[in-house]
Image (tube, rainbow, N blue to C red; front, side, top):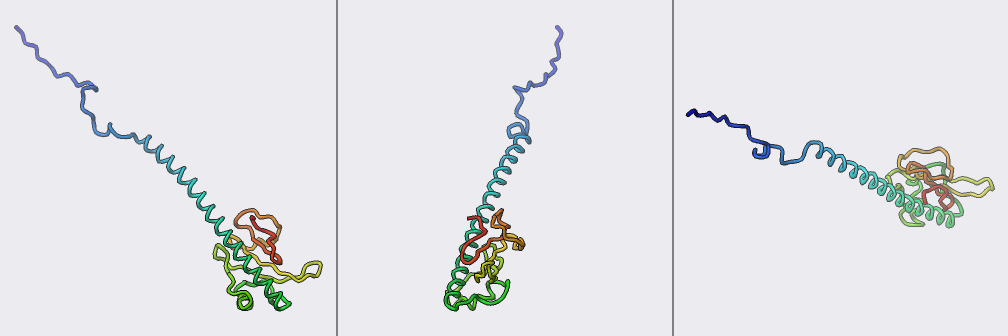
Length: 165
């Protein structure tokens, strides 16, 4: 009788114990999830930043309305506008404060508000209050059209002539 030597046969994949790393997610699956999370975070961040700018614009409009009201009251009390050319509102705030309490001197982006008296083509003495917007830079011209948060916001004689609302 001859004995056959039995050679061990390799274990099939079904019978083999799980190898390390096969039970988790693949690198591709993890990357896809990270891409989706990044896209959602980007959308949420841009929406949040827009909401912050809308809030700052609302604060700017409220501050400018208060300054314009104080100037109109000053003009009514003194029959004249505060003197000077283009200047920051903080320069005329001491003159306005007794007639209307404390006035805001900064816009929603913490840039200074500006004031200038001028005479219209019809000879009417009036004023403008400016906020140079988010960028704090003068656009150079008042078009009456608001484009974005960097556009100047302008009050003329107590009425907004250039703003989002």
